[in-house]
Image 1 (cartoon, helix red, strand yellow):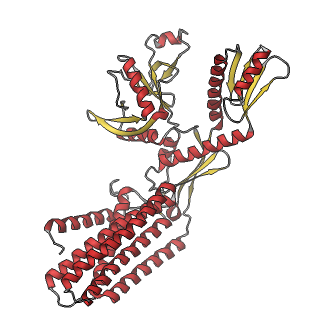
Image 2 (cartoon, rainbow, N blue to C red; image 1 turned 90 degrees about the horizontal axis):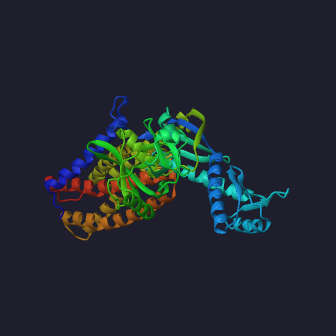
Length: 516
């Protein structure tokens, strides 16, 4: 028999009260003075409007990086084949190199064609031996498509890491991205977040050359001058010892009460980082983000755990922003805001009003049906439905979910599933009473046996929601989040809270007849 222990009762009541507490802001008339941790559910773009940003991907920068990488590959190939060359150079359109020897020229062209797919290798017609490497139209189109897709993915992770804000992010044309943000009337912080490419790398500080010497021209070909985040300048090696592409995670931590950013490498990055810190103890390691040194600590000892810490004059917000940028990955190219405007709600006021009326009528119909079909037990279910809705709103408010029409559909669906669960329980109780069991035994068996069926069916729905969240984006992920929260809450209210109410009624009134 279900034991009504004081600890269990207090725990159930506490969960209900906490859920109701976080749902209260949704019915407060004036929300302007509420603290940030106690806010209502955000409404989606289709319900309240927001901001729209049109971003342009700077493809010229992508092509310069691509051709610079190709230039390095050409240089390596020429050296491997011991071919003399002159005037090796690159720009956004291609790579050029002069090879005077005719026989070596053919050998070089054959080697160049193997460097990458889609390469077109041409020789000038005047016989001076200038060879040009360019990508064909198909390769260029594929590259631009990959850049746009990667940029959209990173923009989405930066704006909506948990998949609860439901922004609209989609490609537009060949080099633009449209971002629509529900409820955001001043997207300055978002523009700052998106304005950073977040290309991070680790370089050794060149201790043999001072900044003054470097400015006078006494600078090694392998080093360069770079500015720091606080205005100071450094001389660092051009080639990074570890690249930011090897980062797998970044989080905010605290050292001596000050916020710092802890990071972790993948296996390859961890091995490189361990080698560098082992071979350069006592030297400084510059951490460069978007061509700016944000920290240059001394290497005190070898760091072999594949992780490290970025220190600096961070605030909690700036540390969180940096960690988010590093987690989401570097943009393949800078983004430029081409257009910014405020957009209205996608649905008119009449549509929103009609939707609310339909929801209220449907909810009321369910309440009436449960009372007519199951009497006192149906009334108890109606109480749990209100609790179910309040706790769902509380959780969604707490995690910052944005509510759109798909989200409302998820709420209605889970409320219906909660009613189904109680119907299974009550019908099983009726069957047990008809078989001759006492009311107490029938209630115990009804909840216990129906619970297995409820768990099985809800686990199946949870698996579907997980698939939607993993493969979906935007409103689909929002629907998955809402559905998951609703299922978990409905299992709690339909089984735990309902049973608590039934058992409390049994203990107080000791009925001899089932009120079904």
